[in-house]
Length: 222
Image (cartoon, rainbow, N blue to C red; front, side, top):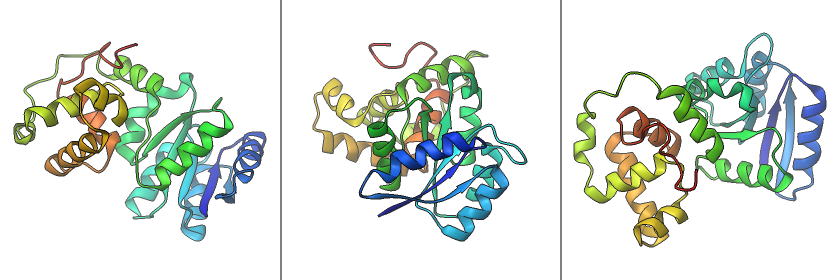
């Protein structure tokens, strides 16, 4: 059973997510929080596997709450709930330790799937948010020289990192490079290890910051 904490300042949204998740046999909402400070306290007390975290909340916002949970070493995985109007905060959320991002109009099966994905230790990035993130945060001075750490990567590992930065899934990367999906997963694991990255989210940030991905270069169909 995957235990979930829902943090949102709107009771109607909390109730909606609880109703959707409780319909799934392997998911259980174990608590709710109406602000970020309460979310941190509930995460400490309940030790949920996943926290669905709204960004805009009173007392302490979702970014501050995520940062506090990360610094406290809590094992809960934070899945950010956002809207297009709030996605200017996504970069900060990545840095704070969030491992996934969902739009609030998500369908039930997408919400349940996302919870399962992050609970399993994977990161989750919505392609549309990835594209908008690039457009918001990489529109500035051109990146400087690539970090020396990238020199450790093989040509194939660099290709995989670039495609991860463009928002492709492992299956899509496999099709793009004519590789098996398991091989892609192995290459990505080596990239994370060599660069000292925690997860796929940090790999996306690195791809942007190092200049491997530029604005407008996200998914091939974008």
